[in-house]
Length: 311
Image (tube, rainbow, N blue to C red; front, side):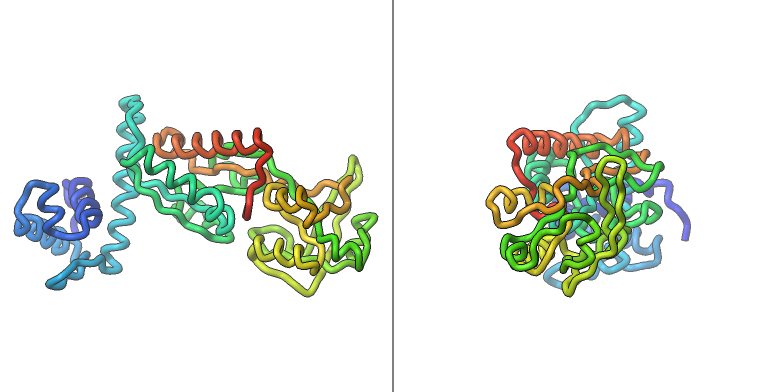
């Protein structure tokens, strides 16, 4: 297979074709005949040696090869656009594909609603939101911006602090009434703790500090999950002590449905960072999205508003 000198224009053509959803609609937008669009698509498929679209009398749909080509084409076109803007020093409106990764609860509660606002403000940006418990490795080039909790994982990325955030230990009044409150981190080993499997955190190992004192406690309990919201629900139901991000449980602490324990002890921070590869530091769409995130959480902090489902 040879590489076409017009590869960028072919990628732009196929991206438009996919966005329009059909040959006729693409022909109208390109001011061409449907036959001309079909011929251009056939030439592209012939050069690649694969079918990109499955055609029927009623509709067209992407083949698996077409989905792969489209995803990579949009990424490459966006990078070309970023490069041209960086060289030209352009301050034009953000455009192109923006791929965002975050955790399911945080994505549903905060990133999703913000993206609704974002695409209205920047109609030339196409957004893909990926919700995973663990972020994909940098080497996979699977995202443009990742919302990360805790210290940034890699020196090869740019990490912008979006909001400070603590992890707290808490449980329900019903649990405290039945089992009492731990007086020291060592006491946690005798309590029922709700365990969460997320990221690279040590599973079932809680680290606490108070001044110069530091304690590492192996905790256990009958319930574990990789979903933070489920863990909080179990704590609300009186099943044990859970460690969660402050903004995740703030509303329950205010209402009294949960109570903090071992308040004088601190746990590792869960500060929220927007993490993105260094090559995207000049990207207008990345900068605009991260600016929106920062402004949103600055307002939330000012209003002392809790985040729901912060992981």
